[in-house]
Image (cartoon, rainbow, N blue to C red):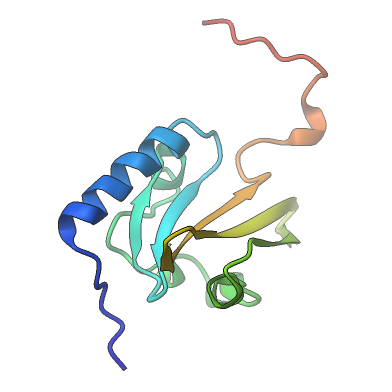
Length: 128
């Protein structure tokens, strides 16, 4: 079975630019991933956790952290899937989102990794 990425490089470059426009400043780690688990693009928050473009996301961290991965379901059904998980003391909601027009790609992220949403006041103003 050939798991190679069959998307032209120019198209991958355009997808990476679009990904950065949408997710580059998101405060939680986000990655654009191929079905073979190769990371196509990632935001700055994701890079801070030791992930990098071209690596297999499944090789990051302990193998048990990837049990229950729903990427295959998201790609098979072409519907977003999510679940609550507990990792250490943190509770997170993890998402796998198919990418319209690209059945072999998905966006993967969790909320609650870098931000404790239970401690956010009703109105947060940016002081920049």
